[in-house]
Structures are given as structure tokens and as C-alpha cells.
Image 1 (cartoon, rainbow, N blue to C red):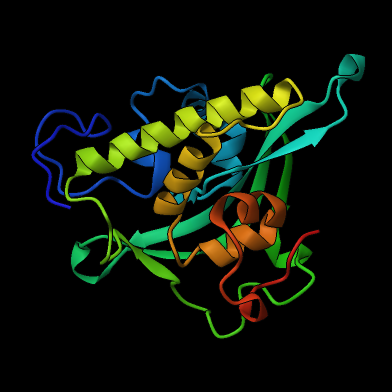
Image 2 (image 1 turned 120 degrees about the vertical axis):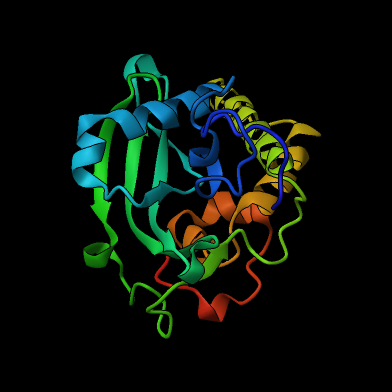
Length: 223
């Protein structure tokens, strides 16, 4: 992605590429409550203690749990995955998620950290994929500039805001907002990570990414 635009995460000047997939590419500014939560989460001492510096937050799945006064609490569960510079310094090599982090979005309290190496019911990562599962930016990326990519990131973050607001009220995200959210999520989920995200939150990602292309090749899946 060759971009003459300014990347707010890097300051003025033409960036060569975002710092990584998703919100970490633009965590200096966002108008989204979900984006601010992700930014603040990365700054927490507990996060820095648990999570390697080279790790990234994947797109989260909402969870509904019993809350006070019979109102369900809506949490966010973030898969954490690794990324390291590709040979030659062009882009990142992406590795499968190694943990999940669950956060109460209202209190910003980390409620659960799960190491996937010890909790998966089937081999994790998927058999035959001990190394990278993709690259960022991917060769077939639909964006021509970093600015275009960051605009889609911000639109998806605002879509999460709308989705979480609907869940707070006990209703589904209405159309056409749900279709817009699904389209953005499908564009922004890295293809090599998609089987893992589906395994970690099958109902959510099947709802918004559509049916799994090859269910026989999925890693251990949560109910």
C-alpha cells in the first residue's frame, strides 16, 4: 500500500505501511468508543505484563454475561496473535492466535486471560501450520492507500459501537447496518487468521463472515 496520506499513528509524513493489522495501525486517534477501549487496553500495565510487544489485537467477538439488575453485561473477547517483520523488512508475518483477552467494556477491567496452548480441545495451532499463516499487507489487499485502509478500520470500529449498543439494549443490529458491518469485517479479517477466529467465536464470525469454507480444516472450536 503506497500512501501519500498521513498515518496518525506515525506522525506527519508519508508512511510506507500501517504498523500492523487492525486498530494498532491507527491507535493515535479514533472517534470510536471501541477503538478507544483498544487503545487504552494496550496501555494497561497488566496488558503489558501479559502480552508481548509484538502481539496484536484481532477483531473481537462480543459476549453476553449476567449483569447487575438483570441487565446482561456485554464483554469483548480479543484474540491475541503475533506478528514479526518479514525478511527484507516489507510487511509482517502473521502467526496464529496464542491467547484471548476478555474485557468489560464499561469498566475497562480485564476479566479473563486464556493461554490457548493449554485450553484448546484439539491441536492448536492447526496441524500443518507451525509457522506464519499469512502476511500483512496481503498481496490481494483491496486498498490502494494506507488512508483507504485506515478509513475502513475506523468504519468497522464505529460498526462495533453500533453493534454493542444494540446488544446493550437486547436487540440485534438492524439492516442495513448489519450488512455493512459484515462487509467491513470480511474485508479486514486477515484470511490466514479467519479459521482461528471462527474457532474461538463460531456463532459471531459465522453470522458476519458467512459459512466456513472448509469446516474439516478448522482448529479446535468453542461451542
